[in-house]
Amino acid sequence: LDAAAANGKALSGGGGDDANGDGAAGEGDAKADVDMGYAEEVRRVLVQDMDQRDILRLLERLLEVIHYVASTAKERVLTEDEKEALKELKREEQRRRRFETFKSMATNAAGKALERENSFLSGEADSEGGGDGGASGDGASLTTEAIVCKNSIDLFVAVSRYHPRALVPLADAAVLRDAALYGILRNPEKNIRVVVARGVVRICEIGTAANVAARFAKMFCDALPSVPEHGARSREFYLTLCRIVKFPGALANLDVPTLCGHLNDTIMGRGYVERGPDKEDFVLSGTVALLKELLVGARETGMPGVDALRTILGRGGLLQELFERCLFAIPAGAGSGAGSG
Image (cartoon, rainbow, N blue to C red):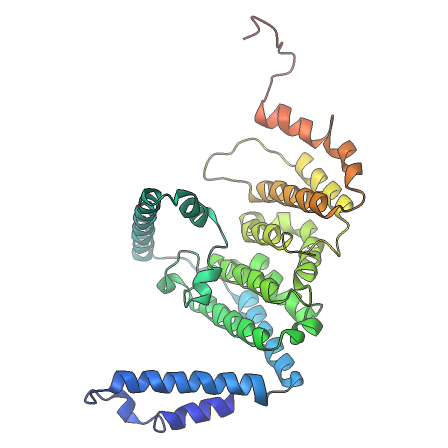
């Protein structure tokens, strides 16, 4: 990378003051050529000049950066002006989305539009195409810490595409676990949690040879007992884990029947009285969603032991509890015949 930077500076004329001048007619085209040459040089260095040990160390350093930023980030208190600006951004985003939805409906693509709106992790394509991958879709809304994490993830993914074998020794490394868990669960800044969550999904997509998804699934499931204490911060964790377990082979390292039993106990032991639209229990909704994804995945892969869950989830178990006390909350002793109201 140092060699690429030196070469890039040489290509741009040594980085002198001319780069900031305003007289050259073809300055824009020249700068574009310089940027292209710099990018090609970086690609050459990553592919040809760095050996496996250097690549592995680079990936480790990027994960250490994410871990450090996530573990030291503090929840930022917005000023009144910033709150108003954020509200206006959200209103503008809602207007834009409504327009896009109506436009898509007019072209018989309403289903895709709604899917794009409702997908939490729909930013992978934007990230690949130069988007910000942020929570609101506006790069200016990302904090400095979130931008550092995003850039580190972008470089990690780019290097891993050139050297997929480097993911094999990293898949079980503590530095990967710390970066993922601190980034998605244990830090207070939502922007960082969303950026790292999308990054984890991207890493799973390029790490199919090393079955990185199975490692992440095991890592996240091992952390489940401590997740409820994080409350609303657990939203990104559950959404990411639900996405991870859908990857082929992601359930390979999991004892799905035992895990489903644990999730069943979590749901049954948690209060689920409606708290209002602004007080969603993300732990409860996330646990239910994860249980559903595990059952679907286990059934599709023919995993042994899943049939034993009928005793836990069937009559007298979770499904009956959800049916009688959540979907149709029937007061005790109420009749079901004519005239019972």
